[in-house]
Image (cartoon, rainbow, N blue to C red; front, top):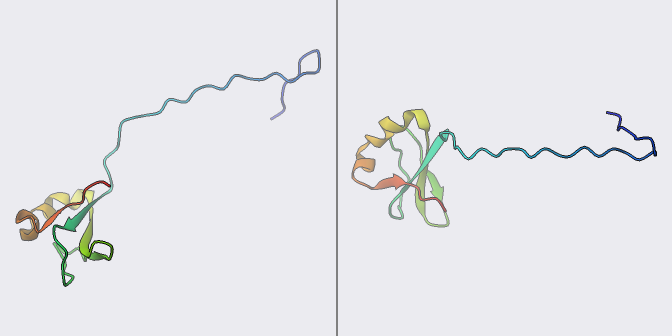
Length: 88
């Protein structure tokens, strides 16, 4: 893109337009869950394999958003052994 030059030989500077930032968040594609307490062994919940967090020794699960309702019906979630992960 060629810059425009005025009669004095100086470049014309076009003012920058401010971009609007959207504050509306879309639904996340996945939701993270974790075990409420540190767990000695790994186990699956509703067909999702667990991931060990070695920092806290808790188990974590990444659940697809469209499968969230089925996951929440699992016994471990209902009894609060597995809870939604807190935002850090």
